[in-house]
Amino acid sequence: MLKPIDTVKLFENRPELAFKAGETIFETGTEGTVMYGIIEGQVEMRLNGKLIETLEMGDVFGEGALLHSDHLRSSTAIAKTDCILGPMDREHFLFAVQQTPMFAIEVLRSYSDRFRRVKELFQALI
Image: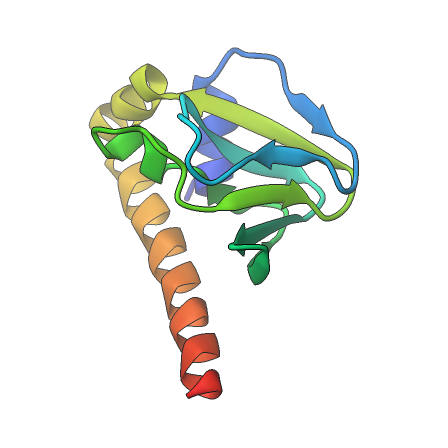
């Protein structure tokens, strides 16, 4: 079964993007035109400057900006380590969802897993 990162690499013909540790990938409130798959490295997702999760190789992120009509980023993504990311634009994302239903399911599963981790973290704070 293809993981979302495998599909990102398969369907996108854009060059991979490199980010150095500490470099901002995108910021909250900015318009997003691509989602990313982590080919190498780790990415921190932050909200109001606070760490909400750390994503690992194989994870995808930024898909929300492709799905919402305002295309705005809801968090800030910062390279925790040197990273290589595979970008996927909306056109390729929609094509992948149509042509590869398992891609859609795996993106949903990834998003659900991440949401569960954030809820667990939130529960621990209450």
